[in-house]
Image (cartoon, rainbow over all chains, first blue to last red; front, side):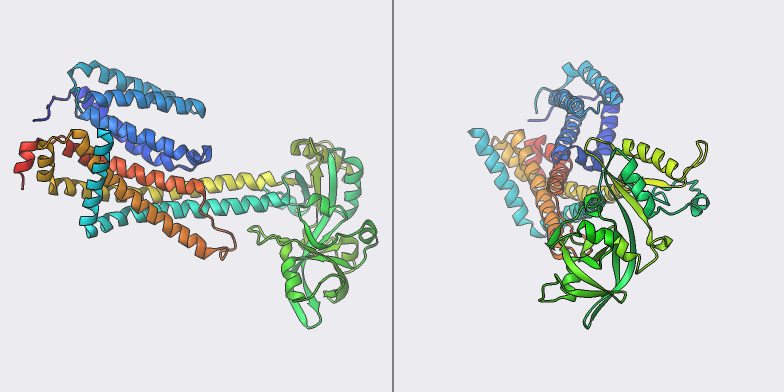
Length: 114
Length: 414
């Protein structure tokens, strides 16, 4: 049983590279003093969001549909949390929407399996 | 049920792999342990320091305004030469404040100095003496454990009475009741009528534990209360519902009229409040927090790379086992979970050890650094969050690579 190898489009490669950098750069933000001040469990919630984003990016890198689905779910969770704490970042929303549209454009070409 | 069975089995596989390779497990744990230790220790010390400082500032009173010669806030163009010639707050100005300030609930004139206290053959040097007017107990937050505070007559008549700190009482009167005993303050006899409740050391200094409080009218016979080195000041507490800004505004007008300053003239007094200190702490702790964040971040990064490296080695080593498992029907997610658990478990244990070390240090340190160091719940949650996060992030790629292997190719590999 050979895993299906689907050639990844350049746009998704760029999206994934930006996404990986984004996750790595924002990862230390999980334990930033400002996050801890919002609430004791906030670092855990932020950590879960960052880890899920990272995993979804790996999914997209391997051209897996679950990666796109996970990214969309995480996007909504993340924005809901940011909305609750009144910390909405419009640049982050715009970047995420760009990512989602790029991923959806190639969704049909992606592998539906894990 | 099948999923739960597979879930349990993948945990057991992961655990077995960790137990079999003990040295490798310990070495990988070390990276995360050091990382978590570094970051949580920094945060614990910073949080404890911040908490202690804020407690000390709060003990001065959030709703108290201090009329002084020098301001507490410093800026780049601090015109110190202008403040040099300012007059000191005077005891007579206290009456004007008490009479004319509607927003003030209470006010007290306070001056401090260093003296030698003696009782029989015991002598303690460099004790802080606080010389205060009667309403001092209403503007300063403190409790009296034994005895009482001065009466109005004792304060106004300047009777030789004192309330002393707990540490001082224990040092001067071991195994004795200090109340009613006569101590010598700079050679003058003073009767102890009360003992402050023990508060512990204050980072900003000024803990009542080692202080002697005497009525200012009595202190006039001991020292010159107009001496600048005594830092004379008038403490004014706001009435409930009156904000500090309102009180400052009212006091500004009042002090200007008391000192007969012309409308265009510059004020020759400073109105200080504790928020000035708190604001400076905010920026200081912001910087310390970022420094700790960077130090800890790099330590965690190194630990994460260590875990990822070990997981890749682990996948490589067990490639043919993965092949056999897959050919016997193991699903991709089973292989994925197996390696993910191994990675998360590894970093979780590493984080746990790191947190335990921090906890042990806080236990042994106690309050030997002049403050209590406490590992807070938020830092424990943060420690576990980071370790699990590192386990997930650094273990996912090797685990996913393993789950995507072709069983035939995997069995063939050496």
